[in-house]
Amino acid sequence: MDFSLTDEERAVRDTVRSFIRREVMPLEAEVLRRERAHQPGLDHSEVRELQLKARKFGFWGLATPEEYGGMNLPAVLQSLIWTELGHTFVPFRFGGEADNILFHATEEQKQEFLIPTIEGERRSCFAITEPGAGSDAANIRLSARRDGDDWILDGEKTFITGGHDADFAIVVAVTDREKGARNGGATAFLVDRSMGWRSEFIQTMGEGGPASLIFDGVRVPHRNILGEIGQGFTLGMEWIGKGRYTIPSHAIGIAERVLQMAIDYANTRETFGAKIGTNQAIQWMIADSETELEAARWLVLRSAWTVDQGLDPRHASSMGKLYGAGMVNRVVDRVLQIHGGMGYTRELPIERWYRQVRLYRIFEGTDEMQRLIISRDLLRGYTKIGGHLA
Image 1 (cartoon, rainbow, N blue to C red):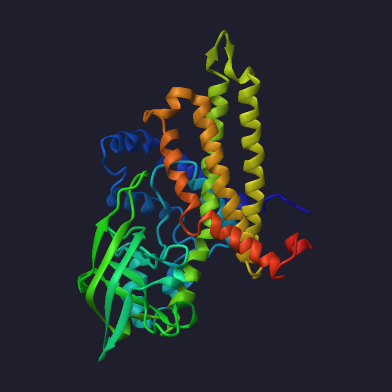
Image 2: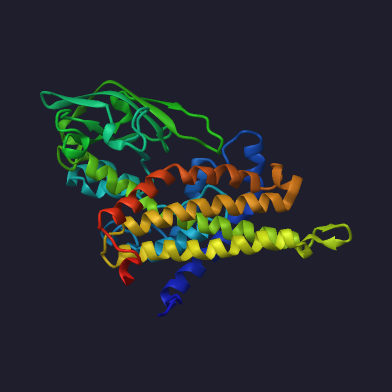
């Protein structure tokens, strides 16, 4: 059994690592300064400039098919890249991406929505969560009723990532309440902001924030249906599923960075005439963090490998998401403790990560939902203990 990276995987990872260290990490002090002043860490034009720099190195559209100018990388390579991105808190992502379900668009829709999004000319958001439908996405209430060649949307979505900046939304709405969302009663719509929906920013404990989207009699042309009528819930689950290995991949990168900070601090900070790294209490926190980090790494890489093998990734991805999200919360908490009072200040990024990673246990499927999926798969015999090695 070979756990080493291939030459290609190592080369891609190292190129990304070099770009992050050379172009992105030098911005960290300025990002912290801006955020202390309650300003965005980077504005859209600055992110765009970094993305175009990365494009010159060939990094554009990690998951985007080659026919649209992307790299179409396998899931394992994408996981490795997301880990490298986690090494910095600068809000940067590689460009050339679009919501994975936008590839279900018609040719006309691709010209209007998909391609401009890939090129960075348009910004989208995905809207399924509602005030009464978070983990229970099948309980959505926002309605869409047919009116001639149009549909009229009424209702509210909430906690929508990027919702305050998007110029169009992919909205999952109920089109047949008797069927129910899960059984073909929900449909996805491409809805321009100019059609009349509005957004309200939601303050959170992290930097940036999601938004509520309000639809009050918003008229949407029938041609703006994404996929087919009744396919909305299926598309929604496909969208959510992508995050099940990318989020914990990012968490691994954060944990690697903060653990190294803890090691460096333990080897230099002195109390009572000795380095704090000589204290067993500190040693155990470092040892526990490294052990959990390594366990998360292989759970997450296995979930990405499952995707690349064409196997059903849901069980493995739920385990990776559950453990990876919990791991990074525990590691950042220990690192903050090791740094003492300095860790609690906004002079260092540790408290920022502390706030950021708490979200990882909630969005794209809460811890509780991952446990439900994992246990249900076992109890109903959908999978065996030991997975593909069973």
